[in-house]
Image (cartoon, rainbow, N blue to C red):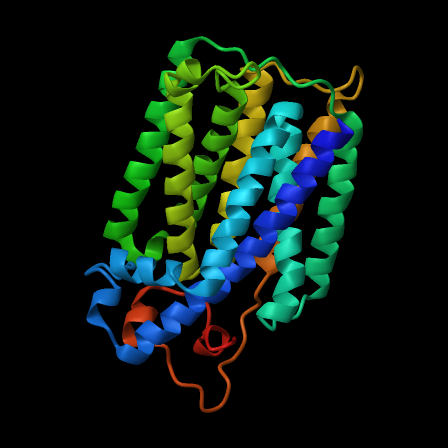
Length: 318
């Protein structure tokens, strides 16, 4: 249990640091695209084009953040196999705390009192969860359910990509939710994956859960990048937390046999609900609206059409 918790915390640190660096890279790319007034930066519906998303992904900050995400993925996968999903996914989602703290330095964002209170709530809830968590389930499920997981991953990511391109900037929160569901499917896939405990390559390659992990992971990262590009970061991140924690946590209990310590079920439920609410609050209160600085140039008409809830002054920060 202790090793699993430390692994999940390390994954959370990697994800939180990576998210801030990716935000820095995405904003740098957005400023460059706005300066060029590139018409190809957005689709006809106001969403980011594939080329603009690719340009955001090749900034050095975004690439370093992505490397940290991969490290976090490996650590998170290990934690998902050692802890109940309601605990591992919730600890990993606490990367919002790391993101909020690092944003002070890298994004020049001040944390307000509600944010500090929310961070305290998350930390307290994680203590409750760690106290109440019992043994994780076996993770052994019929192969048919692995196929359903793959189908669900394809529908979530494929449908999300289509919806984002149709709705443009109005899809930021939806993109965050769907990316969270993708990361949640990834966590479930890691838990049920065959051919890992006793390594057996044919079983591993023949398991649909492996391909669900790839689809959900890559697609979730793409949708998360889009959400960072088109604004509404607070709402999008809050939606991501809900999708990444609630659904896998419920599936872990109902499908995979995760459980709490005897007599501690109410503590686990309370900790889970409070942790998710606190994480959503961290995201929601983060990056408060500010008035544009005097003389600040607007980002671009396209950026305004994207429905970003962040002023140009915030995007112009380093």
